[in-house]
Length: 126
Image (cartoon, rainbow, N blue to C red; front, side):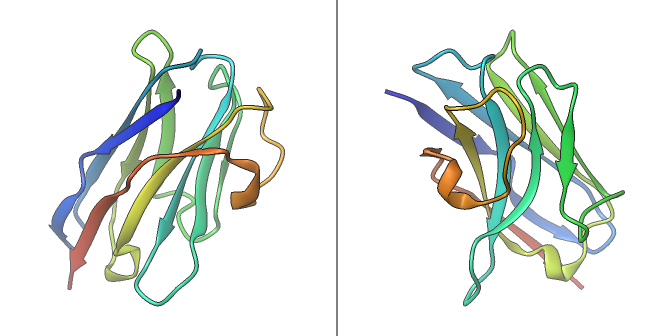
């Protein structure tokens, strides 16, 4: 059974930074693509960033490009999301997700990611 556990959320002022972590267990972590999504109140869950199995390829939503960085440490079974220059519109619950069918990035659709964490809340004050 795959388990994904996010941590690192919190309250930060606009312009600040946070680093989210997602620890994975239960299956071989290093063979699957991973992603971060977020969901703001009243909105649909949206793609934020993704990384392929070895960290050699990444993808970012336009809204976070240049501010957020996704990376992974396969030795620690952990994927990270470094978030800089945070803005109030980044306020959301952030989820990590695992695509068990592909090593490489193939889609931004939530339906492709079979395993999800419970989410961690990020609040950015103005």
